[in-house]
Figure (cartoon, rainbow, N blue to C red):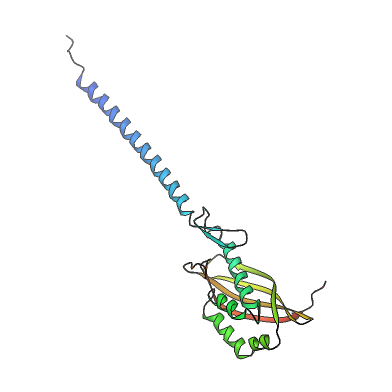
Amino acid sequence: MKLPYKNIYDILKLNRYITITVTVTALLSSTFAVVMVFNMYQKAMNSAFAVNTDGSVIPLKLVSHKENLEVEAMAHLSLFHNYFYGIDGSNYESNLEKALWLDNSSVDNVYRQKKAEGVYNRILQYSLVQRVVNVESQLDLNIEPYRFKTVTTFEIKRGAVMDHYELISTGALITIDRSYPKNTHGLLITDYFENSLKKVVIKE
């Protein structure tokens, strides 16, 4: 004689399959949601700053700061050397003030030594124009502080006389909070040292 209802074991078996199916579907949905949220987070993290081709910083563009660290470091070093060594009687005070926002006391010590030696007085006295011609830096970005070596070529003009010099300097870069517009790259020069300075002949 057949019972008017299904065997209790068949019903339990069916319920088990339904439970497993719902659980697996929920896990897959949750995994997919986590992956999507992680991808959105990564994209959001890359939306803090942008670096133009000239090294200047523009906030709120979709660019990874880490990927642009070398560009920003090079731009920071170029900016500092142009400010610190590209001076004349009309701009040396403002340029030196801008340069000192990009570094720590190690550069301030170099500035004070130059001032004591009468470098800036001679610029005023003889109307010298010191112009940076080229800045080339080598960087080690493997570990912070990031060590650098920079070769700066600059010219000093006094009337019709033009002399060229090559300066080799070394130091390190550390990351700090960005300050607009005083230190837009969020980097600070430390352990700065002028290794050598020599007069060079520029072949035309």
